[in-house]
Image (tube, rainbow, N blue to C red; front, side, top):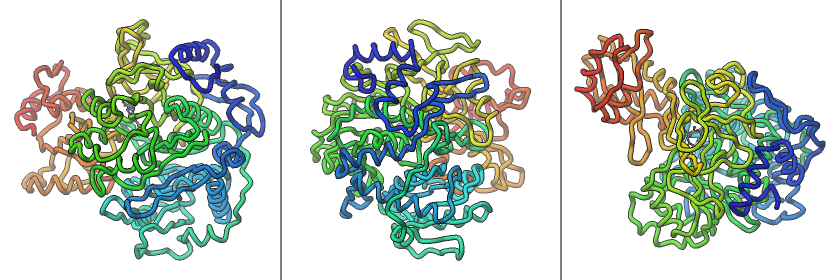
Length: 635
Ligand code: WT7
């Protein structure tokens, strides 16, 4: 039996028990047997969750790109590492072998160095899903620069906030991007963002759509000529196990986005381990995750996890709807995809379309199907199972977070029996706990509560960039000595976990994690708006959609409401991005508030969800009369 690759349920239980009984030996064996280290660790784990301080493989030295690329050159140099599938199905796919990836990453790394990037510097990557994105990420890791990838659907203001928060000195972008029939002017967005980012010294621009863009003298350079001139080999920077590998921003319920900091060795070990087990990847498989590398799913399960296993990983540039709703399945057939990983929102959207889009393609290569990002409803699960998996492919409903770095609760295919809507069992090394509101752990089965993790795991985020106190307050203060996830969950009679959704003010829309605060801040920028509150309500395709309650200033009250709604969504698009647009906007005279001035979102949520039979206790409200008024005018 090897700890690294779990192959049946009995093995899972054995390995799981070992991982709890003796976590250090468990992870030590995995680290020892499956990676290359420049120096061995002195201590596997050191932690104090009250501070919190966590350190895995302390004293070890390594470079993650050596593990993801160099070591494979000897054993599988001509194997395809990355398949790039372009937006346009008529453009040829690109197959990048491990040898070629090595050269491209080395050249890019040398360009970064030539441009003055040093170990520890932050580099913002704002690129579409083209090979340069994966190469840029790895090039940063090669030289020890900390990458901060910003999803290239975020607006200029959102980009600027993220660039400034971690003081990036360089931005990597492209002239533009393709999305179905549309092109997006990425360079224009970067230019706008940089008007308020003084620390950025240089911008390197990849050419993708051949648009006519402005290049700012002294700041902007085309990437390709620099790559062509750069040396094809680059000695990897030797990093400490705990050196930061990257920063990735995620929304919080309040305040600005949180720059989650992930460190090198633990992240590598955990993403590689979970990739291998959750997808049961075998040497000749072709694996496809449809996420964007701008999210944690892409970091961990398009780039690092698969490459650390010498896998073939697909990067798809386009959208599920172009040229038609059959695009995903056409790609599955074309590249003989074995493992397919996507979001429930995509499944729900696809399930609404004609089955012809599925049936015209041969999906028999598929072995494992995955979902991530939000709870999957039973109907979508069955559609996925029946029509895509042909009832033959286990579905792994993987629960995790930007903060956890890797998958935490998930079936292991062909080992764990699956049940729709259940993420099932914790992966080896993960010790979940359900807590009641008084801070007591709920032991035994058939309980539901707040989901925590009570023991460190290697890929947990180590801090929030520039604000360790916030890291402690957000994740380690609600329940002493435990990491609090912000989710609720139940444990059924067999010990299976079902995630029931957020218990804070984060709303998951189409699998995207949206905090209420930045959206409300954006709305409040509108000159006619006095105050606003947004909540989520159930939506057939998106899972949740956003409902805004807006109080207008007296000066704005006479304005045409439809125009105001458009303007509000326009402002949100500019400040946050189009994913945060509101589906419904209700103008109201007041918002239900507690005596301490806090908006009672619970009530607003119920009204938005048309679930007003029992509004709960409203006696603590300062202004109970507004509730009836809001209900009477609900949309
Ligand atoms: C939140 C984290 C992990 C990568 C994508 C999202 C929700 C995630 C599931 C699932 C139910 C899920 C949780 C979590 N979530 N996966 N399988 N079932 N809910 O990362 O943006 O950090 O969001 O997504 O609410 O806390 P993220």
